[in-house]
Length: 278
Image (tube, rainbow, N blue to C red; front, top):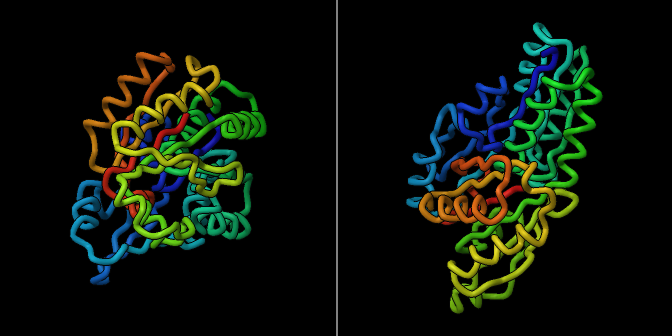
């Protein structure tokens, strides 16, 4: 393979899949209220982040990688490969893709940048597909084209116990009062065509919200037997596992990847967050 694949730590891919497809990860960082700063994946595990998030009074702050971090990864990739493809978290959610764009101007070589327009395992699935395409396509241009086409057909849904972290983090406009909390309303959201976050529906109760997510997969998905489904969760493995089993039974996708939401996406998803891409 003459292509080096690079993504960022918001992909939430299990380590074994990163190794299988030879995907390098550039980490984002998270800073807690006491000033402790960690690089995602290398400096703090999802479980450690979940516990710190549970105890924190204020929302931690996520930080994009500096352009030089990407430039270093691009240079190292080009030492051994003819081309580099970077797939990054949605530019509507983070400045990470902008850092990668700035870095690409500092490095001489064949570098291709793809805005995933999603995050978590939506990005992770694209990275896995890129690994598959890179083994079968004759040119880097053909790989980029196929990744982009796959991205444009992808849907990302999420459900969570509360919108509070999204609102505090500035990823969603504030909604009226405490109505959602009082009525046990569970939001179901979707990544928009531009990679932002839209609230699709509000469902009363956790169980019904997960049932509705399954229905939406059937309504929105196409050719699911040929697709990879990504399901990531923030400290709610039993529910994520049941969701995986239901989707496998009803839709028979080619593969389901189950992963843990790390500090970048988890800061905004909060405990109980589930993100599903297909």
